[in-house]
Length: 100
Figure 1 (tube, helix red, strand yellow):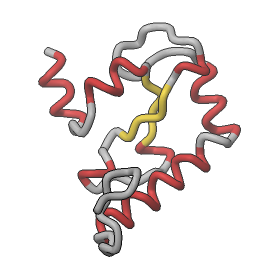
Figure 2: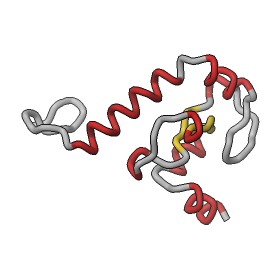
Figure 3: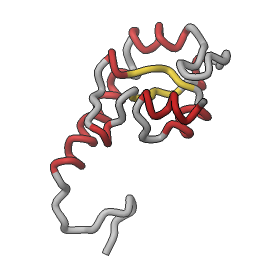
Figure 4: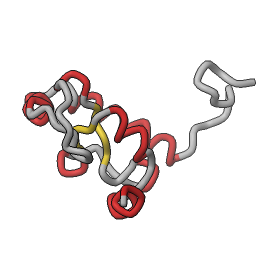
């Protein structure tokens, strides 16, 4: 039987799931900081450099959590929703190859 987020009830989360959940929590906390407000106040997507209203910018991990990335300032960028959705789990060099 599955719960509301699609995980099996009664099954213990894997250590990778625990890692990703912990990093997502760190990212949520970083979104509340002055550092993130300053980063988004520039109003440009990191990937396409298009102007985007600051409140519409999303937080993206340059190295995705699924590939071992962490929620640290040097791994987080402000991206428009379109670029963030297209990039999904790609690494920076994979994204560059995909865009070209």
